Image (cartoon, rainbow, N blue to C red; front, top):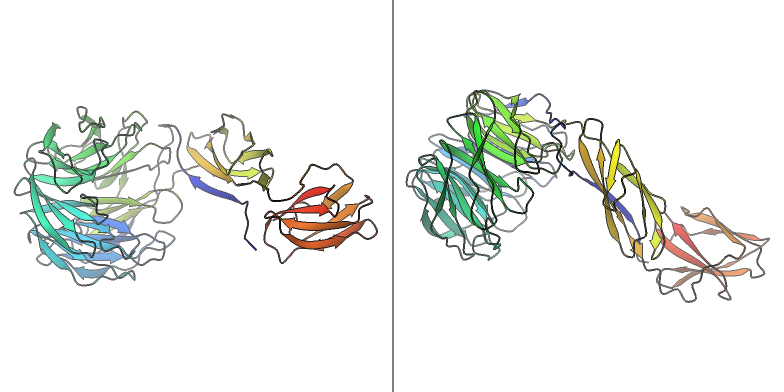
Length: 525
């Protein structure tokens, strides 16, 4: 028997219009001590348990990576050390060999190479393999540059004003190293599509020229000459996202000599509007930067590692691409690296900060006060043409994608349809709950007609058993599934019969009189 044909699925996504009054909040940072000075860090599930882990690069004569395995509660275990290369500065997680396990790529500043550590899927890695790159590798990005479905790597080489692109072969190895000129002292680098041709492009943050360089990709692994866009001051790390929800990718740059971040909105044609500065924290010096929707309102926000203040600064974004001044959350001494993920699986984006002064990682769990919105349907299963009422609860006001501004919405879907409702709490925080109403055609039942004959089914919907009450002259009934297959014959005795369908799957069934004049729909939950 085929399993449930019409089911209801409910899951949460967080979106909606921007509200600057929905204040973001984090629990006090929890600090995890490392065995050496922390540099930059990344987050992924390295042991396949569904929880996000942390990997932190540690510079030194022999650079290392320290891995801390996460738990469902957002806490982390003791660090485990893996050898990388000399002067490890940055680390990124990616599945380089397509085995479903997360691997690591590490930039080694003094070694002028990168280390590739292939993951086993158990929270361990095989010994690093190193690949030579241009002098002074700082930061990197992993993406498929030549559309062969295999991940490649781009590295910002600070000493020679270039980026190095290494083409991956899909096994975790790299070849065809090529250097492309950019501005002076490139520190941060990102890769994304900035001109809408679906080919990844490269943007670098150039600390020596006070600008960013954009290199448009051809989709073959080569790039056009760089086009530079000025910012006011020394740029360090860089992040990207669609900050104004226009479908074009934008960039944000951390300013290493002031408390500012600079935002350049993308035009979608391979260009950017003039940069606009925003304050991350008065007296801050921004080193690391990342982006995500931290207050779950559908707009991308920014988070910075405020080096001089020992805080993580969060700048709330808006649908127009502007940002509020940063709110600082204390971490430990001299933070430089920052990353984000949902560490405790509660649907909110958390932060982790690498503190070079404290040789530690600070984890800040997001506790922004969001409403919990749920939706129920008046009819658990529908046939085509039937109507149901969806009712939301858990917020103060509601806005449905059907146009309803009430707590409920009436629907008559012809096919399986997803509906969404934005629930807004009294603190102006918003959550969008999506509800999928699956619909069955309810065909293949010969002679199905509406019937007002004196036949009653109770309860309906039912769990395992139900009773047929009939005062009709017809006392013989058959039960069919939605494929039209007869699964049971029933004979009424003394105007009723109890039926047990415990062995059948949940779904829609039909009770039909032997002469076809009476048809009733029943639902097993």
